[in-house]
Length: 255
Ligand SMILES: [Fe+2]
View 1 (cartoon, rainbow, N blue to C red):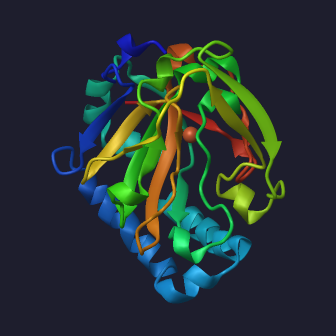
View 2: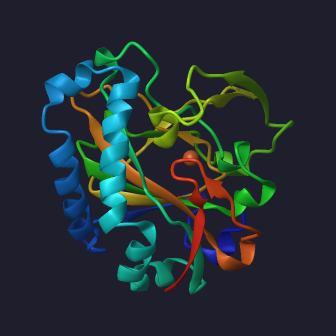
View 3: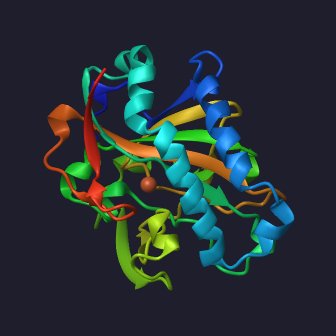
């Protein structure tokens, strides 16, 4: 990952203070939408994975009608211009809503395993940057997991990949809300420990090469966040189709 084009630190990420950056305004708007769809926690915790993800998908669609990543980059153009040495950015045009139920209430796996964006995408995805924004009930014990400085690790030297299938149907609501049907297990040459990536009241931008995943939710409440990938124009190669809605994945935005 070429970190010289961005303000990401040697650990491959940067925290953005939601108060100082004014992202809190945006967050409370999205939170209002989330609360309309998820007002009965008790009932929601009992739903099957697919029934639950059906609601996540509806809320995700509603969020994107009002607040998609293109609009966010435009609204906060000064912030992102400062963080990246480019005015032209290709961003995922659509936010994924992550609603992670507490571990105690679901028997099935409800988080996304640790990965790099290049595990499911082409090589040039190594320059992708992730934007993660906390929406509700985000705490250290339900935050994203990652391996520290893992954006610097080399495949087939520092780690090896093993593919396995998950019981997620292609085109199902689970798939449409960003869950994978094919996962890869990472085998490290040297033992490494997963660590939470979280700072209270902060959003995060991080390298797509930093190995990360949703992490299990050990709190008592459903935790909500949104995320999108983006890439500086000079690293962008060509568009792909987003499986959630069959539309082109990236949109160009000038900030
Ligand atoms: Fe990811």
